[in-house]
Length: 176
Image 1 (cartoon, rainbow, N blue to C red):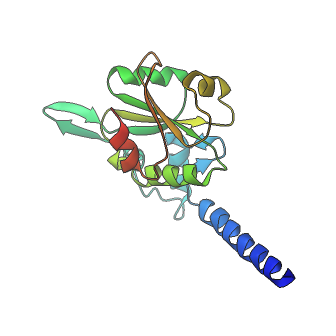
Image 2 (image 1 turned 90 degrees about the vertical axis):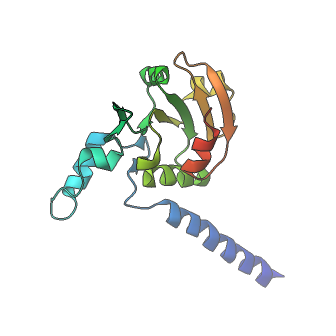
Image 3 (image 1 turned 135 degrees about the vertical axis):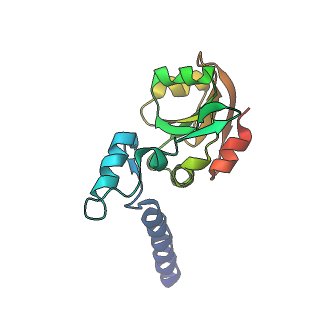
């Protein structure tokens, strides 16, 4: 009986350790406080490969312009939350991503968003909200657990709310 218990604990420790190892990618452009800014990402990119810049600021963030029907359109973005960024809903869609640094499913979605920045549709802004510190926002939108997404209008009124999804495509499919 004791051998079974010890064996089970060892297996559990290996599984938990694997989650932490997978979730702690040293090349991820994330800090405990949230996504890096464009300038921070530029600085990081500039320090790689003997100081040679490997990507431009615009292509790295997925915000290069694209001509659509004769108008200049910018691709969507993934940014740290700030109240004034809700105004972006005047010309597009804003989704609040209530994410915790310790949450494995949050890390999975965050990683997929970062890997596919160039696939965020024009006019879509995803705002990274710190689940652990933004108590007033959680209360306003009735968020009771991390990995909750809330689409809002420019006045901050909730349009729709959902939880889950591990890929950017899941998030985009829910935007109304």
